[in-house]
Amino acid sequence: MRLCGNTADDMAQANDLEVTQWQQRLARFPLASASAGAGRIVYRDAGAGTTAAVPLVLLHGIGSGSPSWVAQLEGLSERRRVLAWDAPGYAESTPVQPASPHAEDYAAVLEAWLDALGIARVHLVGHSLGALMAGAFARRAPERLASLLLLAPAGGYGAAEPAIRDEKRRARLALLDQYGPAGLAERRSGNLNAPGASEAARAWVRWNMARIRPDGYRQATELLANGDLAGDLSAWRAIPSTRGPVRVAVGSDDAITTPQACARIAAAADVALDVLPGLGHACYIEDGAGLTTLIEGFVENAEHQA
Image (tube, rainbow, N blue to C red):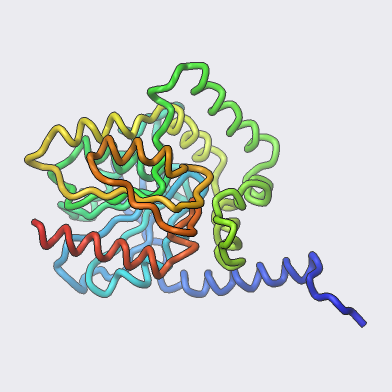
């Protein structure tokens, strides 16, 4: 008679069940594909054709993808169109051309993708590395931005000393080379979660990280080394006539982009930092309902101010 059910096999089965439940929810939002310059972007689209409101676009981080936004696709699409892309080099999206890209390269693809979809203006949400892309888009095309929300933003190392940039790049790529996507997810995905995160959230973070493409992850690592979000936000802030509302938020238990680091980003955007109690780096997965409410409230307030 087995007295304890907390074995490795039991835990694996529980994780499989939790991932299956996430996947069942995701099935409502199948991948679509659209041109983006010389390549294509795959994405998930919810609420298309149901409203004339300005669409909401969701940009994931370095170890994730469009499936990570399933709670927001579910919760935000009744009132507006919601799109979550797989960034260049993720899923079946065409990589950017430079081997060592900058945020501007991803922003250019984002603009080309929106052009292909016939979308003139957006509310833009960027998480982690996605915040670097969002900041570059704000600087590139401020007239197309209805609002900007940065969640747990990665600031990039573009303003750091070359030796620091090189070490950050080397360390991240060494882990990828040593373990591969699945091994990296097994060993590193837990760092994205707060201590109190549910097992369901942990399983979904791990599953998303295990899906990364090595080529896209390498380019994203270069972007992180080259990026300077604070610089892009400062430049965008200097264009007041076209600047929309902006908000920066981070979990209190985020060990990746800490509240201290995010305070610098908020200062560059000239806003106060919102600290979300008890949440980690994967805040919008850990508290899907809470972050959906936060996003919805911010977007609606932005539209009332317009």
